[in-house]
Length: 189
View 1 (tube, rainbow, N blue to C red):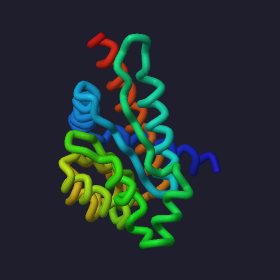
View 2 (view 1 turned 90 degrees about the vertical axis):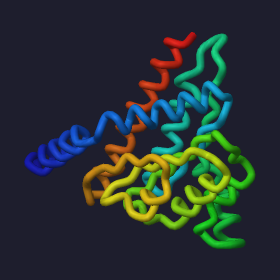
View 3 (view 1 turned 45 degrees about the horizontal axis):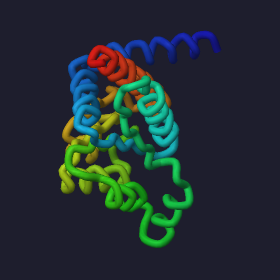
C-alpha cells in the first residue's frame, strides 16, 4: 500500500511540474482583466469538476475581497441543482451550463469549463455559446484536451489519462490562479 501511495504522490508532483507556468499566467491575467473591467467569471464542470468549480469560485469571490476594493464577480454554474436538473429534464443534459450562460454571459466575461477528458458535451456546448457571446473561454482538462480544447480560447491540459490525478491537479491550478489573482489585486490597491 505504501508503494501505491508514494507512486500516486510522485505522479501528482510530476504532473504539476509539467504544467507550463505561462498558461497559468495567461489565465490569471484573463481573470484580472475581467475584474478590472467589472466583468464576471463563471465556472462549471461535472462531477469532481463541479466540486472544483464551486471551490474555485469561493476562493475567487471571498478570498480576493478586501475593504474598499472592487469585488471579483465569480459565479459557479454547477451549484443550482434545481436549474441544472430542469434544463437536463426539459431539454437535454448537454444544455445544463449553456442555457444558464444565456441568462448571464456578456462580452468580456470569463467562462471557465472543467472537463477531465475535454469531451463533456455540456462543457463543450457552453464554451461554444460563450465564444459566440464574446466571452473569453478557458478550459482545464486532461488527456489531450478533447473537443473542448479546440473550442476554448485558452486551455491548461494536465498531461495524464488518470482522472483522479487530473482532478487533483485542477484543484492545484485553481489555487495557484486564485493566489496569483489575489496577489495582483492587492498590489493594485
